[in-house]
Structures are given as structure tokens and as C-alpha cells.
Amino acid sequence: MNDKPVGIVGGGLAGLSAACVLAGRGHKVVLFEANEWLGGKAAERVQGGFRFDMGPTIVTLPSVLRRVCEEAGSSLEQEFEMVRLDPQWRSFFQDGSILDLVQDEASMVAAAERFAPGTGQGYAGLLKQADALHKITDKYFFYKPIGGISDMFRATDYFKPSVLKAIAGLKISQTVGGMLRKHVPDARVAQMLDHYTQYVGSSPENSPAVLCGIASMQSKEGVWYPIGGTRAVPVALTRMAERLGVDLRPGCGVRRILHEAGRVVGVETTAGERVELSAVVSNMDAVRTHTELLGGETGQRFTRRRKYEAACSGVVLYLGLRQRYEHLLHHNFVFSRDPHEEFDAIYKKGEPAPDPTCYVCAPAVTEPAVAPPGGEALYVLVHTPYLRPGHDWKKMLPDYRRVIIDKLKKTGQMPDIEERIVCESHLTPQDIHERYRVLNGAIYGLASHGRLTGAFKPSNRARDLRGLYLAGGAAHPGPGMPMVLMSGWIAADALDKDVKTTVAA
Ligand SMILES: Cc1cc2nc3c(=O)[nH]c(=O)nc-3n(C[C@H](O)[C@H](O)[C@H](O)COP(=O)(O)OP(=O)(O)OC[C@H]3O[C@@H](n4cnc5c(N)ncnc54)[C@H](O)[C@@H]3O)c2cc1C
Image (cartoon, rainbow, N blue to C red; front, side, top):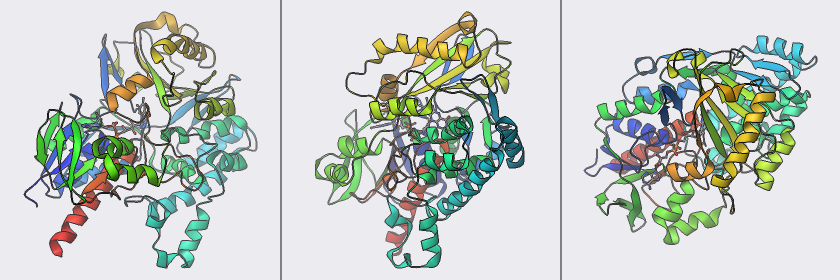
């Protein structure tokens, strides 16, 4: 389509998604990845006969993955063996009670009502509200390069009744936490639903209510597990990219994005090679792309326009257990005693929560081959603040590991967990920062804080340099597997449209 190829900086899920879409549409593509593996955070660790997904484990919105597969000339069915997980999660509360989140709305309404009388109708009301929010985002927000409300609606459309209705429907005066509690007064059920915002590493007390739409998406499309783990996703994307002739270069970092007269002309690799390119999709964190790969006036324009805050970080324990726990489902949340105290510590004080929520993944429930017979490759994730000055996780980890293990013993009802561990390793915020070159150790890109601006991340069509496109958790529409796959699609689609418009002109 163009003599010079398109370059992609970073081979995370977003970069791979962009590569598949661009190559599927006939572009020559070269992808530079600093690490020796492709897939970024969707990495795996094999240890002592156990196989762990190191990063993402909860797969939602398979329709996005389907779309990327189809763009690459394949299909979801051809590339994956997907298993639906229903119940979606098991929730363990401090008072010893347990509630499962099930997909079917009527069944969940009945379960919530049995669990806390008066809650069933509240759950139904919340889902109705979430459906309405999801409809607005589907129409105005998804699959489009958006950087702010002005990209969602054209100025001339502001007085159209349908647009006014959509803006009012966004409920911009409300937060996720506020909207949930208006519908669901039971503290435990509300705490369970709060955790949809943990998919974006942000506090429900400070995130715009529009994120409640996640509840609708999860209830409509379900929660899935690809056999082979979430690692199967980058493996399949790599396979499709290779089939389409993408020049994949793992172990090759990019030091600078080169530009002339306000337009991208290539990149310089960390080995000093200069590669001429017609355009670049950066899957590196959007802030670091501007400050480190561009710098100068172009980078400063971006940082001056808006101050972005990193989303939360996390500690992961990978625990090889000689014996499974029968009371666990594939996905489990072991909740903190007090969500306000927890979110205040992580998001305001910038300290690890004294009594955290632990997300516990037990994949042997669905795929026993992840562990030796009868065992479990237990994965425990606790959200922590993004890295602050003075955080030294080499020193902090031993004490915090003890807090996590005690929480699993008591609230998670695993009193003998230490006797079952046969191998153990971990990932800290510092490791996340160094392995994935993110902003201050953030797991999920940029925080979604602020009622007016929280939902908006940098647009996929970069504002400060022609020929630069952004994809990944720190670009629109945000973090999490489906959203970063979508961001790769949007960046590729915007680039493809721009090229076609230029050719036609
Ligand atoms: C512990 C953990 C648990 C998670 N759980 C879930 C979950 O259950 N469900 C879910 O949906 N999401 C989850 N997430 C979030 C999800 O993993 C991310 O949103 C997603 O994988 C990010 O993909 P990405 O492509 O934006 O970035 P990344 O995966 O960070 O990839 C970016 C890539 O770019 C490379 N790179 C950066 N700079 C350069 C450069 N200059 N030159 C060359 N290469 C460069 C990096 O090495 C990296 O490989 C989790 C994340 C973590 C860490």
C-alpha cells in the first residue's frame, strides 16, 4: 500500500492487535518489541510443573477478539478453544458469607435476594442502568478514536435530542460507587460490584458512573477462559500476524520516534538502527511515548495539555499447591473488611491497603493440566498504589506477603495454605515497572479518576504529531484485555483511513 512499512512500537496485546488489523488490510508492518517475548503483560511463567498466566486472567467481551481474528482473515473458533465460566466469580466476605456472581440476570436477581433480602430488585435496577450506559458507549465511544467529549459528538450535533439524551444519560454527576449504592444498599453486594472498576485499576469512589456499563457487558457476553490460558491470546495473535507477513522483531527496543516537519518518518532502535517508516503505532505507555520517544516541544505539548495519573499497580503471588481447594471456583475475590479504607489507602494515601482484597485464580478447576495431578497453579493478585517515591518492594514484600497469606487463610477459608505450597514466586510493582516499561508500575495504564474526564484517555490518533497513533491501556478506550485489543483496532483503523484519504486526495 505504501513503500515504507508502518512501524509498531511494542508487542503487547494492543500492538499485536494493531499489527493483525493493519496487515489484514494490506499494509506492510514491522513490529519492534523490547522484550524477548511477545504479548507484554500477557506473559506466562512455568515453574516446578506448574503453568501460570502472569498478568491478565479474566477474559471478557470476546466479541472484540473475534473482530480482530476476522480482520486477520481467521475466526475465534479457528484460533481458540473457549470455555464459558459461569458462575463468573465466587465472592468471600469478611463475615464468612459467600456469594457467586452468575451471568443470567434472573438467576442473579434471585441469588442476590436470597443473600440479602431487598437486594434482588436493586441488582435488576443497576443492570438496567448499566445497559443504558453500555448502549451510549457502544454508539459514541467504542471503535472510534476518542480523546475527549468533543470527539464523541460533533459541535453541530449538540442540540439534537438524541445527543442531548445521550449526554444526560452519561450521569456525569455520579461516581461508580455512588450509583451502585443507590441501587444496591447491601454493603457486601455493592462491594462485589465495586470490583468492576478494578478492571481499570481505579477507585469506584472517584470513577465516573459510565464505567458501570462494564456490568452490562459482562452480563451480556460472559466471562471466558481460553484453553492454554490467557497466554493463548498473544500466541494466536502472533500466529495470525506471522501468517500475514508481519516482520516481528522481539528483543528490539525503540529509543526515538523520528519526525520531520510535524510528521513521523521512522524510528531509531536501541541498537542504533534507523528504520524509515510511513507511520508509527505506539503501544508504549502514552505518557512515556511523548516524554521519552518524542521529547522536545512535541512531547511537552502533550504533557501540558492534561496531567494524567497512573492507574494502580499490584503484587502477584504465584503459588504452586500440591493439593487443590475444592471450595474455590476458577475466579474468586476474597474481599477486604472495608472497601472505603482499602480504596483510601491505595488511591489517596498511596499505601498498600492494611486489609486488602485478594483476587484468586484457580485455573486447574477448568484446565487441570496447569498443575501436576491434583495440584493447583494458584494466582493471587492484590492491587497496590502505583509506585511512589520511597516504595522499595524488595523490603516491603515479605511483610505484605504475610498480610496476603493471612487474608487467604481467614477470609478465603484456606487455613492450611502454607503447608500446600510447593513452589512460589512473585511479581511486584517494581517488577511490573521494569518488565513492561509502564508509568510508575501501573498495571492498567492511566487511572479513570474524575467525573468529567475520567473516562477519557489520549486519543488513538495522536494530536501532536501526524503519522503517530496510540494503542494500549494508556490510550482510548483504556486498559484490560478487550479494551487494549480494541485500542489496537482503533489505532489501525484510524491509520488505514488516513492513508486511504491521502491516496484519494
Ligand atoms: C497482574 C496483572 C493482572 C491483570 N489482570 C487482568 C485481567 O484479569 N483481565 C484483563 O482484561 N486485564 C488484566 N490486566 C491488564 C491487562 O494485562 C493489560 O491491560 C493489557 O495486557 C495491556 O496490554 P498493552 O498492549 O496495553 O500493554 P503491555 O502488555 O504493557 O505491552 C506493551 C509492550 O510494549 C513494549 N514496549 C514498551 N516500550 C517499548 C519500546 N520503547 N520499544 C519496544 N517495545 C516497547 C513492552 O515491553 C511491552 O511488551 C492485568 C495486568 C496485570 C499486570
